[in-house]
Amino acid sequence: MTATRDPHYLGVAYHVLEIAALVAAVLLLLGLVRPGWLLAAGVALGPLLGYVLSRGPGLPYYSDDVGNWTEPLGLVSLAVEGALLLLSLPLLARSLRRRTY
Image 1 (cartoon, rainbow, N blue to C red):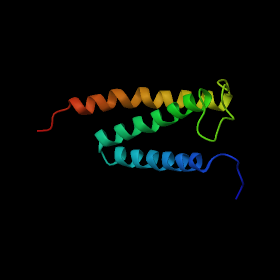
Image 2: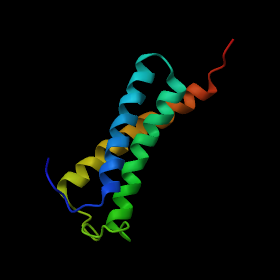
Image 3: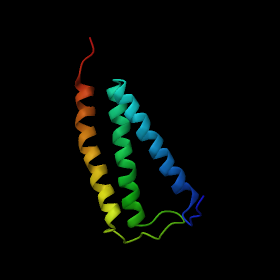
Image 4: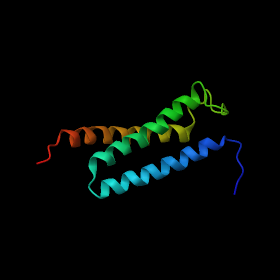
């Protein structure tokens, strides 16, 4: 196990994100589109918000990335999360408009 100086809550948040992404994928595979796309949107929004907060004002006990807006891996992550958000929101809206008979 490697030691890190990051706050414990960041590691927990990453694990929660991984579990939420897996649950979203399972929901979508099972045909439960409304909760699946809703959770997928949350999986996209969480890291986007975390990126902005960690680079802007900083997070509690974590200010290492304040002002580091152009980190290459962070930018790739933003692109992937943005793509997931752009995919999930219209599909979620479509599933909400669909009537059940």
